[in-house]
Image (cartoon, rainbow, N blue to C red; front, top):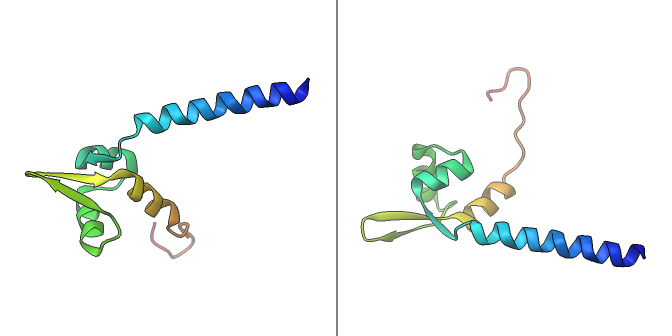
Length: 87
């Protein structure tokens, strides 16, 4: 009985993840990226220039590759904040 319950719970979790993935855009405008990532406008342009973040131009609009950007943020080393170090 517990195997059936586990399978049902896992299926529900996977459906919820798929639902959330569907809602997250592949590319998004700069202001959306800023809300998702917490990065400011200047830092976003800086990371685009260094190639750490990818973006595309559609006409005059700049769209940020949200998936790649989130992966890049996740790959960054953890912050080390302590005595005598800047935040």
